[in-house]
View 1 (cartoon, rainbow, N blue to C red):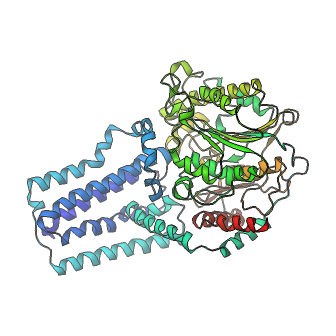
View 2 (cartoon, rainbow, N blue to C red):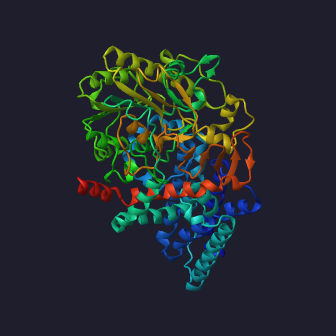
Length: 620
């Protein structure tokens, strides 16, 4: 074995580094010594295999291959750490193809970097130095066929042992593709990426192999679960303009709350008193974040477990709200003061049949009126209303805010509340940017009234996704006055505001509605308020005002919320006490949650709505 020490030394360095990263950079829950052991050995088989390929190489190529491979694997590891710092998630192949977003990430990326990150590449430098100096450990010795055979048989044995042990710990592991933490905990981050490549290849083939028969079971499921709309509210906003605002990173915990004794959202607190407010409304986004929220809101389908639909399936056929409303004389437009190709929006909006996309080129953007990700929300709304005035009515419009976006930057002149004080700069800065967005929404509503666009509209405001990730749980616990943020608390923090405001209606009879719901419910709710029948449409949401609406929301990671229970990370929690209870309480909903995610994935991966749209055309 001494002859091959350089290969084994490279394996050892990356193995130990990977395990240290698992323990210090990722929040991977370990519940037993067996899980810890699996986590420890999980990188080994991949590293032995990938570095073992050097055994087939010549002297000139071998050391170069070891150093370059070590760098590439280290970079993949570091990229996952950077991604996890922001999203509390791991990179997937579809995310890697979202390269045209990278130029816009700018400050967010630098904000996530630490000086200590040099640690991720120290071993690469050491290996490069050893190879350059040709120290004894790096000297070349040809590998015999017998040694190569023994080496790879041992590698295979370790891989099978790892997989077998993982299957005993987590049965049906490879079918839980949406639970990336579970996969990485049991397979290791490198084997997970190999498996992800396999999944990506399989998903590419799904569209080619799909046929209309796959849609029949889904249609039967949806028809069987269809809920009748509320007769008193059906059509109450018929013919009105529709104004939807995506409130960036806004979580419900700030509503009617204070920081340092000052209201965080004074305007929204008052607006809620004139509206229908849903205080048990959950975001259901995956890796696509804001784009996922848009996809869910307008299609009533779930996002994908890997990547963003806006990237991976932007050219699919959909039956989104803008397309449906076109049949009722509506003109549709999106307002977002960013690069039109960011998140592939220019392509996806065409697939959803939007008539107009007001992007960065339609706004007057200067250094003075910008911060962080671009045009500040107040000038964004002021300029957007001027564009809105030019649209034919009735219109269906969507406005996407920017200021309350990580890393939550704001100039002193725009801060209306002081920063919080905790060990998290992210949480500290979150409150002033939320307060600024709240003020911007106030300006927007005032502008709508001034321009005569308020009275004949229905206004829907929704939070798109979380702003504060699990990486800031300690600071969040401090703010909320808790000892810690449990998995139950984490799910409850995924609640985001949903406000439906109908001038002349909701201001006379405002309501706080506490039924469990999610972004997937917005599409059928809106269409029913506009007096549009949704029977036989393909959607998984339920009318929020239906008397038969089920208290139920599925999150993209497989967690779900019911009236009395929360299921997350393979545990069932009582909502009243927040304590873990026997899993049997959550079992009645497990199959429904799994089935809806599975059916929705089939629709997207197989582009099944092309068959639905043909069915509709044939009926006309």
